[in-house]
Amino acid sequence: MTLLADRHGRTFPYLRLSLTEACNYRCSYCLPDGWRADGGPRFLDADEVRRLVSAFAGLGMWKIRLTGGEPSLRKDLTAIIATVAATPGVRKIALTTNGCRLSRHLPRWRAAGLTALNVSLDSLDRERFRAITGRDRHDDVLAGVDQALAMGFDAVKLNAVLLRGINDDELPRWLDWLRDRPLALRFIELMRTGDNGEYFERHHLGADVIEDRLRAAGWTPCPRAPDAGPAREYSHPDYAGRIGLIAPYSKDFCVGCNRLRVTARGDLRLCLFGDFGVPLRPLLREDGQRDELMQRIRALLGHKAAGHFLHEGKTGITPHLASVGG
Image 1 (cartoon, rainbow, N blue to C red):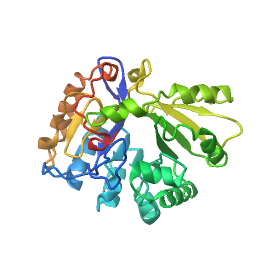
Image 2: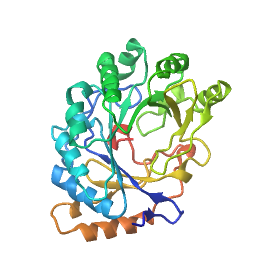
Image 3: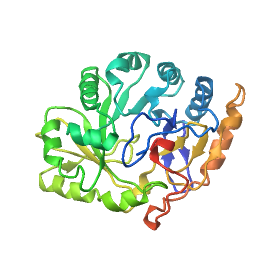
Image 4: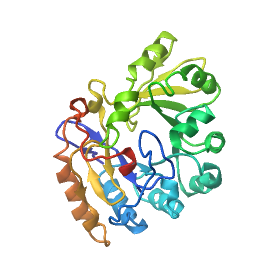
């Protein structure tokens, strides 16, 4: 099947689907005051998710990432994973989570069809973790990560937002931790959103700082998989783990874009930092609208820009990353 393609020659095997905007953390860079319901439309229900994923799979998308907010807050998450896994054409189902509920739910998610896992872990230091997230769940997250490694997932990855003056001195500790753990740690540059301008100015640090240290220590670039996210990954023969760098302010970051996003309320976002979203929900209310939905998605892809405008200080309509799943 021919993949979706835009007018810039990029193809799209990968959908990031937010299931909720709610989050039980208070991360300093995202939701420092916690999440509050805004009285807007409810989030997509399981049937709407089924219809949506079926349409995107019909357009050749074969990797689906379920995100939030924090998707484990959905009581029907296991059923949603099973529904996505049963969709013809879908080959990979990933989940991005803050990890606080891994130990309790991971076996049932795996049994439902989950194939890959991304866990947010901004520090290996328990007190720093608590200061960043507002929650003392560090031990729970680490236990869940080790459990995931023992369960045979296709991929286990950790996401750490790189914060100048807060966690940017932890590379040696991370390297020791990765020596015997076959997972990928990705350092993510802090991104400016509508709500975090002052925080961004204080704590943004370019990923090239970490990249220079890795190269000097003998780490070498890895080939990029067709369905990979935006991380530039590095490996070292002395380490079981890999390190990735997600650097949205780097030159040509958007050239390799291969993913689309749908918000928890059913809006298609062509770019994380775009200035508009297009409601797909009117075509998700009943079966029988799949062909029309597929046609709309194809047409909308023609409006995808060549890149974001973060360098110009334009963050689009994204107030914070929890609103669309990153």
